[in-house]
Amino acid sequence: MADLRVDPLLSYARRVGDDVEVILEVEGDPPGGGSEASLRLLSGDTMEQAASVTVSGPGRFRLELRIPESRLEGRTWRMRLLDQARPEPRNLQTRLLVRAHVPVALLPGRVPSTRLPEPSPRRNRTTPPAPPRRGVLARVVGRLRRRALAGD
Image (cartoon, rainbow, N blue to C red; front, top):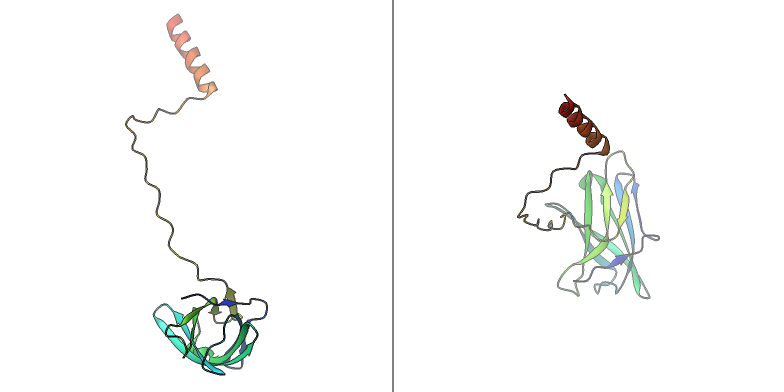
């Protein structure tokens, strides 16, 4: 399942009254269901679905949707395009950020992986590590102390 790239310059999200309006300019083949398409918004275990209007152009299409803000508040949403012509939904390379008292935003790009890579294995040491080296001043003081004790 190939991700659909969303143009970050021509796409935007904004609040309109009690709704969130999302306009996505998507590169790729338009959905096969005519002018209606469905977007699935996913955030953790929560899923919302919204109908969108599709406007096609050469090699790209535009998705326009409005969804009540109360259904989206306080989350970051991944988006998938549901297409009647394709059996599996297609991921959109953008996320929708909706928080109270903050402007809504589209975050461009793929969803980042949240797992760090596995750490490299440590080398087994057969000999214990060498003791830390003393500084120049500590060596000079040590020599003077030994000479002073030997001279007594």
